[in-house]
Image 1 (cartoon, rainbow, N blue to C red):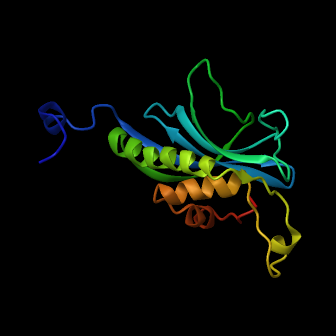
Image 2 (cartoon, rainbow, N blue to C red):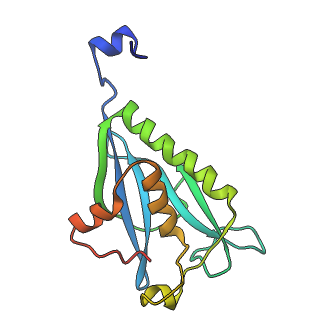
Amino acid sequence: MTDRNQAETMYPNQQGNRQIEQKYLPIAHRGHAVLALIDDKERTVGELHGLGFSKHTGQQMTIGGDGADLRAANHTSTPRRESPIDGDKSPVATVSTGAKEEMERIWAKGAAAVDAINREEFDYKSHDPSYEFGTDGGQIQNSNSVAFTLGKAMGLDLDRAIRDAGMRRRFS
């Protein structure tokens, strides 16, 4: 037994395919990773981000700094509502593709993880030499770690997508 009605069974996928893309926005010597839900007309209809917010004003920061609040964001794109991060985000890879319903089920797992991440009230930590040079201790906890956590929640292998695209993980 399925949850599809008779019309969907006889004429499947009438609403076209969707895909989930991993994208990259260069920022200084690093970058910003974002997951984008793309419709059958190649329009971005949703984005999942990690973002820094000021502890003092509560406003989104252009570049998250150490000690800011780290939050996940589920952004729905419409003609009147632009992305929370401006700039030309280049596709790294298509990490999943399929029927609209299937992609929306996967996307919903990421949306649920947004709420779970935000309940934890993480601090933004963009720079940690101990972590970056591979010594003991240290951690990076930034917008990109949020994007990769959301990818894991959706069952997507973003590390592999980066390797397959011939890129290094410079999203740290």
